[in-house]
Length: 425
Ligand code: HEC
Ligand code: HEC
Ligand code: HEC
Ligand code: HEC
Ligand code: HEC
Ligand code: HEC
Image (cartoon, rainbow, N blue to C red; front, side, top):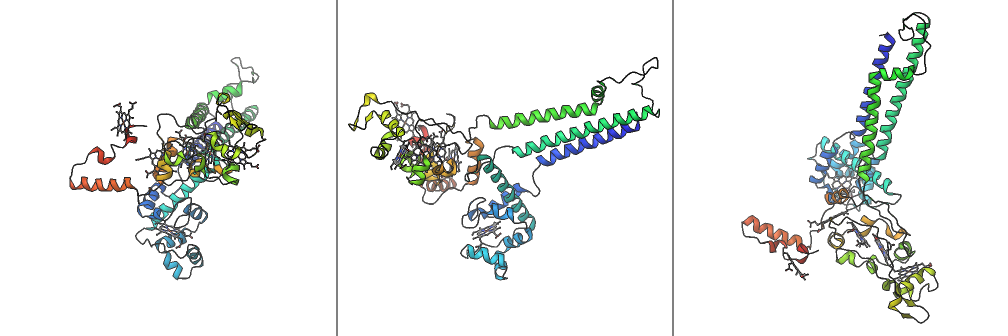
């Protein structure tokens, strides 16, 4: 074994190691401990005044903390914001005034490490939200996390390709050097000498044979292949049956941008079901006729409404025999085995339509804004506070808890077991 080959082996070993470390580094989470931070953030009660992405009593922390790298100042603020305000710190005074001098409570009990964890959590969470937003399109709104980001995958592929190129180039250099050395008779090269001592011309497969002989290289290529196939499968699996962005062409060019946006017709006017029942429901064309009996009567699009209802604008009469209902193409569709109830989320939970459906009032044609995956449902359930005040259900729950604590008997009926919806869809 020549010393050059040895050096090469060492080198490819380091490149391999480096590649592995890079892969590991990219897939590993950022510094700090976001998981611990999340727990502290919640247990310390920050959530009662702060959300990551939107303003509540206090500012939305995601953009604020992510753009502020002065961790020392942030730590001082969280430990005792009023101390900073009273010391005349201009930044502290400004935000205090911006928030109508609402006092944020001091947190002397949090250690610097706790605060660092919180900052790491907020930054990581915000980054996730931003990435999800970028993926969902140019519009802002509901936040989702969607498996591995495409950026990570591209970086992985790039690393693998670069490492491979380096090894190839090095292999080339080595063979060139070896040829040079052997031509100067400094190195006995077996391959180029036949048994009878005559020199065999280097055939064009030498290079390929060398690659195949180099076990490390073969292993590396196999590894790359496995990693690439694995990543591909992983990403594909994440996206099966996810129809985010689905925007079918509808039979009538009805525009939410015009009706809900420009004309400001309430969602409730057409989708009243979304507040009272499980299904939001699509309005019947009779709702459209409240206006379109007299609005835009010449438009071919409006004539589709007339045709569907068997309405004759000349005589202003309906002929049911001529009616042929419009087939709107359904956009949002959960599988049958998943139960989702609109009124529970809008009326009880107080969640706005836009949180899940995006800025519908700016859409000429509605598209599926959220992924509607189980992960999406669950992430929101982990992040959203419930409205307890004035909610009979939770008040009953508290009363029942008291009974259970006291050791009294509790029947299923007291847990809501005689409400129709518990047994019937
Ligand atoms: C009672 C409500 C309340 C609670 C609880 C609360 N905050 Fe605040 N926070 C505010 C308000 C209001 C502001 C805006 C500034 C002001 O009015 O003092 C603010 C501002 C901030 C800022 C912005 C400072 C800046 O300008 O960069 C940070 C960071 C912050 N809070 C972090 C936290 C953390 C972390 C917790 C939990 C440990 C927490 N807050 C708990 C109300 C609260
Ligand atoms: C004038 C009546 C009208 C108003 C007002 C209206 N919509 Fe609609 N909406 C419709 C009709 C008709 C459809 C079916 C055609 C389509 O998808 O564009 C629909 C479809 C939808 C869909 C897609 C349903 C599916 O197939 O999955 C969503 C989501 C939606 N509307 C949300 C809203 C929201 C949110 C608002 C309020 C900002 C609103 N709509 C206001 C009439 C209305
Ligand atoms: C509150 C009144 C109102 C209701 C309800 C209403 N529209 Fe409209 N719609 C209008 C007005 C006003 C315009 C015309 C705006 C303009 O002048 O371009 C319009 C325009 C349209 C157009 C565009 C026509 C064209 O050729 O430019 C379509 C298509 C349409 N509406 C469909 C519907 C459908 C389908 C429904 C029922 C789901 C509906 N509208 C319900 C008021 C209404
Ligand atoms: C918590 C998230 C969430 C909120 C808030 C929400 N929706 Fe939905 N919406 C969904 C999901 C999930 C579906 C699919 C339901 C299914 O397939 O069973 C859906 C379906 C729909 C549909 C299609 C018809 C149907 O009922 O399946 C319409 C129309 C609709 N939503 C309108 C609205 C309107 C209007 C609001 C606000 C009043 C609203 N949604 C609030 C999640 C939400
Ligand atoms: C934007 C946030 C959000 C999203 C997204 C969301 N939910 Fe919810 N969900 C809530 C809130 C808040 C409540 C509690 C409402 C209440 O107080 O009853 C809730 C309650 C529920 C409940 C009742 C739980 C119970 O113990 O009574 C079910 C079931 C449910 N959601 C199903 C779903 C499904 C299925 C999806 C996804 C298709 C989904 N949710 C998406 C916020 C959300
Ligand atoms: C504890 C579970 C439970 C509750 C709560 C409940 N039901 Fe039922 N219900 C059933 C079962 C099981 C059946 C089918 C057996 C039967 O027909 O007797 C049924 C059958 C029915 C039927 C007959 C359907 C048919 O096709 O014959 C109606 C109507 C009905 N329920 C309405 C209601 C209403 C309204 C409420 C609320 C006041 C309610 N149920 C509450 C369990 C329940």
